[in-house]
Length: 180
Image (tube, rainbow, N blue to C red; front, side, top):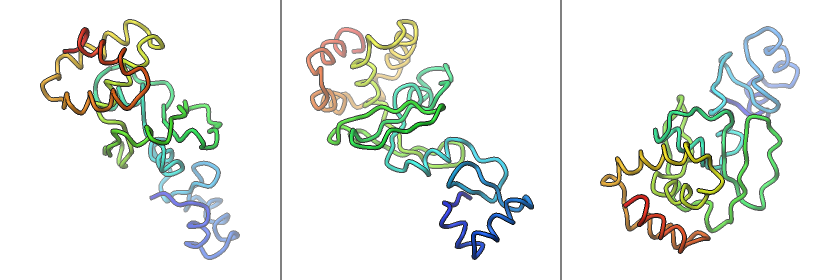
């Protein structure tokens, strides 16, 4: 189980006893401000605890939804445009408008924790929206996987998402030409 610094101090009664427990190996400091009672904690669990309002997006979401077999080198998360910059080497932060941040967010069980992640429908819109920024082979792999599951997707919902984000006309055109 993960604990914030404040929760860990409360659990042990004082900062001294917390430091002593960490020194003796009874409790573990995963990173600054994050403690656990087990030695190994998945990075995904730490990220979802430290950034509870963040949403897994782009490469991470494509991988977790099974749309690609390319394991992302870094975790890709979307945060509010006004959120503080995250200075971590293993995280790519995408700043999203407030009205778009929670559009299409769902929860998924992954590596023993529940994470916020964009739905497959929202990720299709993001794929089309960021087509020019993605490597062509990667884009095609994900697009082919979407074509295979097109009957399982909610097409009106995809169209609703497309009308909410920038580049609506381009997304709708690509949706008709390349996906449907």
